Image 1 (cartoon, chains in turn yellow, brown):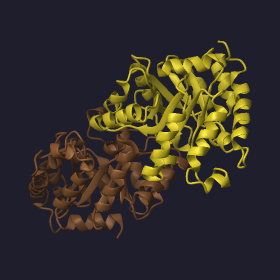
Image 2 (tube, one colour):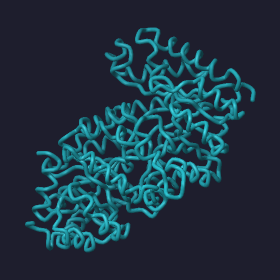
Image 3 (spheres, each protein chain N blue to C red):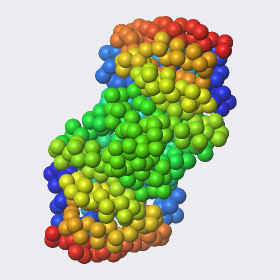
Image 4 (spheres, rainbow over the protein chains, first blue to last red):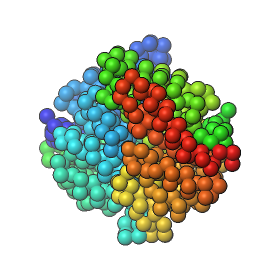
Length: 271
Length: 271
């Protein structure tokens, strides 16, 4: 099953939410903080409790790399827990010169065995080519991000018209020969999303920023519904996985996901 | 000793070359490829053989992450080998939303204990702020990279004049309150280096691209000499560490470094 097929299958089941496994030892329930395998156990319970309603899992490398090799081992074990029919996304924002990117691509797709990755295109197409060569994977390239700093460079106006992020968007369309390209578009940027949505009709979209960052699931759902669009995933991390800091954290995460699922699948289901 | 002091001390000794530890299991001598601890032993010998003439060591995360947690453990052990008076650079091209970058900064500066890092500014200032808050470290931000793809976006012309990379350069100058900002400028971009050098007189410069990528040590040395400039480091990876594929690899690396040292320190020593 290709990554693109995984996304579309879940979308057709009305599932659009990606659970972000931003697992922070200081934020998981106290009884797990004292457990040497607490992060893994937390992830295991969250995946078990949410897999029925999620479209994808996104693993943010920073939360694991902070503990060095031990953290990366937790990451390796966590990826193995993700059911094979659910998209696994390496949130690693990669992008480097060719021979280096080749190793990153091999690392994320062959060693860790992820289905998808987030990428930064600043260094140009050749810096992403090794990822684009994996035809059955999904490469989500940063276009307009959810943070305030998106205004600093992403929204710079270009001499030939449009903003930098729009130029990158246009390039991603050009790189999409194998339908293995997607974009990251911040769920906090509602106006820009509306204004640009017709320019990425053939790209899968990953939308971070709902929940703690202020983006709204209702807004996103409405915008995509108006265009009769599927092939998108809305990431939610903190507001799902840290919904409860007690023993019922997994159940609370499941209930929060279900309530978001109801909003996001309201009109999309069955399209 | 701050990172800035480490750089200037080495520069004042006529040392401008950074040895890049891009250690690839398929490229190290055959007898080490069969050794389960071959990568570490290779790094150990290279550091021992080159520490007298190097200004810095740069560790490219991709080469370690390709083997997951085992590779990251090799990276951890390698960082510990770098003498405390020599700058250690984490070549990781980080940049993410604030709470994520905070963890990456903690990872690289507190867990791995590097002196410096390479960063990607696409997502804006807030995506780099957690790194900039480390006043005694050195944050090398990508400006103009050494690869051909640098033309795709970095050299886009902006509506308000100049290229994207120049706008980022200008911003890095603004962010340099604690003298903990530097830039990555490709050693392959000689004309751009000449045209822009006066615009980064207060920034430390990391120049990759000499050797396998085609940049010339002579050109770089001449350009900086003409400006009477120190506070820069030229990275060389493959052409030093893989100079010989036999038992004499460490000695060969040392000799190659010394010959580059002679070129790069010819006129700069004692400035």
